[in-house]
Image (cartoon, rainbow, N blue to C red; front, side, top):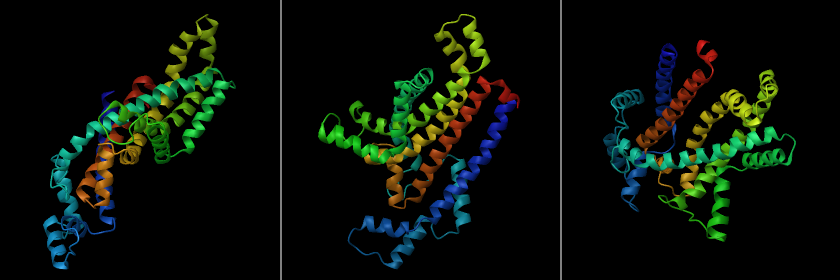
Length: 311
């Protein structure tokens, strides 16, 4: 197990280096001059001269060659320094840390909602194959697959905030403000989770060891809990690992629509204002989170199925 973990960690180092290079390169390809945009924000209505823009670019270090800026940024990154925001002048690590709890609450609630709905719905559809429950779960999965998160978010705001007035449409910090964005974010995860859970449970139900367990006189609940779910768990873990990445990316849209105080909305604001250090820090955060989640999924695989660890 130790060698398995070491191999995965060594692979992660290479992945993270590649992610840092791609993240830096993409921000350099973005159109627009951040120095010009920031000068316009600082002096609204006053046209910026070329000399002022050139001086501000020099102040921000944008005149240096791209390889030099990348190596400088990478060196700071290895020391835990994500840089300083062009907009606010504050350390990006502090700004991300301030918004991290909001994003974790939103994504954690959405994941819990997706698991509590998708997994039982998939199990019930597999156990009642061809029944009304099965057809209903497939209909729910189809609706969830066809509705993008931004459209669902607007529909939720229209129905529950505007028409019914039950829930607030914008803001963050209270339970009432958490309900609509968590539903909008969880809907995209419920669909694949329900479908794969159903398919995985159906596959395990047809195995010989399940028929043997039933032949021994074990109750359906014991067979389901001890034999079916444990063997059907590996594909479900795969979906959960990918779904966490989808939740993080979906949080960018949902947080913006609902004005939720989180990293996603911070990323959108940084993109529009060409705040390159902030964009790099946020993208790197999302990438690290996604890679670490998949690393934990690999460890769970090895724990649940020793054959994978041996391979």
